Length: 640
Image 1 (cartoon, rainbow, N blue to C red):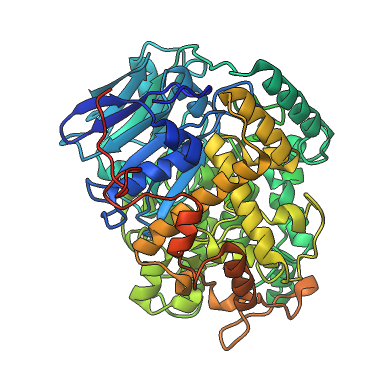
Image 2: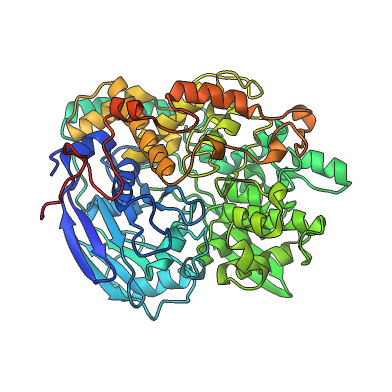
């Protein structure tokens, strides 16, 4: 057990096949070495073994919060879902905001571990330190929004005040490889296919009826100092200061116009680096500004809700009416985010903000990742244009896009093929040149021909192409902690590793990454020490982040991944299939091999593989199918 502050020291292990629930304490050494949330979740998943079938009963699905989740720490409402990804075959963690993480902590838990497969659909009801499995047969086949409303009526809880519902729609049930898990605030644990894993287990929802057990700091004086220092930093930052024009005013979609102006916005399945370049080349009226945060605020914004303990309020709730097939679709949804707006917008050659809002809402109801969905549509559009697909899927055709989203979620027609993800589609059609995937997961909204740090970041991300593993645009666009030239590749390997380790810490706390736009390691150490009662140094905390990142890489190595998988789509690289950037990015390609050499050297890896010396240096003793600790790296779990 652990006596560290911030923890409830209680984890539920739920065997869905047996219908049983057992309760465990958290090993103190694990809590110290892996922090919590993402880090501790990866440790639990690793113990199942990297060779499990992601959609098989042996795969573990871990819902984890961290020692700072649900506390007074700013932006501490997040929760991590950790599992082996059916999309990539790597270990993956996907996080959602809102109140789910806080409410799980207040209900008395640090984590819920689901294994096995229920014979019939169930949902897990969590309250006051106990977990109960309830029948969900009447919910199977329903979209998440109906599920949410039905459970709200069934459960004696205060919806939106004490009740959180995390669940899936038909996309998760049908094991779409990029199925997502949605909560009552339409926040998505979207990347990596966590919803598909949930569906494979016949687990329809996790329902939390929270209490009021907010952990108090073990060291009040240190915590107060760190909290005050963090609040000052947030209020003084141009990016996070409330009502100062950044995230608070325009949400994440504040980046749409910025990346467009940099010629760093992948457009038309990344054939172009901006909508302006695409419009000029194709002679069409097409402009990213129409789907920007500024445009959304002016025309369709209706509310600005926030997550637990967050002064920034980046969520932008919108309301639109869109006419589809002769009927009005009236949608009110939160939130119009940059990444889905990119993939369903510019990358699919669509600049209709109302249609994008409808499509994001539809993805959420079906429980499929809106980022991956938009990119799969863009891939299909390019394949259709090039004659690789027989089906007509035209650029920016919002009528067809809406129907295709439904087909993906229900696995019908071409949608059944697209539901398998970019790598499998590319293999089936011999269409690798049309895929934007790295390790099976497609890129988000930053072009590596413009932002070279994103190139090495996508390639070395442990969960497939991802901006959130190491957010180098903080430095390349926003100048945090200092401005670097986005077109310069030298130094980006080391910069990326530093961001990856820092974000491994925040994901393990679990707090929002937007904290890092204002706070640094000093504020992290003060708040972590204050909450837990520890006395770690900045170097020790950074080492914990490095440990988490290396554990994930070690898992992937054992699952068959090495440096050859640290790649980028050919169109970003100079060569026969490369497509040079346009506009301000004219003639640019991503110097991946040079950056990989620098990155591996900094990491101490050998051709993308973590050597034994590095594992020993970081005290990593996890072995597949075993446990942690002991001379042979194994332990036997004790009873609670």
